[in-house]
Image (cartoon, rainbow, N blue to C red):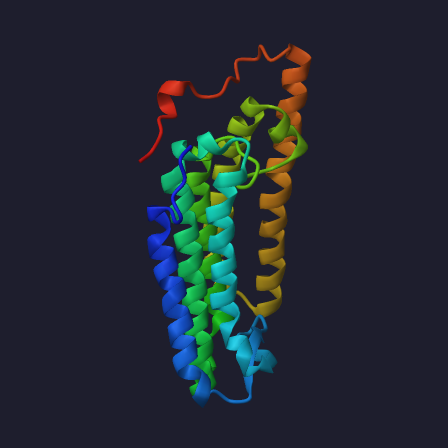
Length: 239
């Protein structure tokens, strides 16, 4: 498919990335020599680095968006991106927005460290991550077969029908785990961390196991198990 230098659907994410660089650059001369780079489960700063680390989130965002631009160009299944391009671009915008908020928070904390007591990142991060997981689960069933984004196991990559069914199932798992993660923000730190890792393991392991079971079932039935992927009528290209 014909490629443009930048896909128009990513302009919003690139705008946030550029804004992050400008804000970090403007704040840089007034930052302390050491800036926060890590927060513990209670929201307290427990790791610092040289002040050039304030460009970490803008740099990560730029790298993420470059990968997002390049992947559809080199993927052997590049034509499939047309069928879920809107969801693909929105996912990267949401990730860029999360990095933008984290960058702003880090800069503000550099000047007003007492704000970690009134607005604890340790409290609110599970809310943000939970919302992100729920959003990913909502759009995941729209992901078409490709080699860069989605649930990539040996079994989803071996059978497009397994890919389709796994992403339908994984979408539900992501939504449920994301919703459960949000109220966990108000648990004591130890329980919060334990629940967080349990939910993360769940969203990694359950879809992987499901893809294997579906693949095995399709092998045993010769693919005639009534689990065919959605028809082409439901996978129209998006502008």
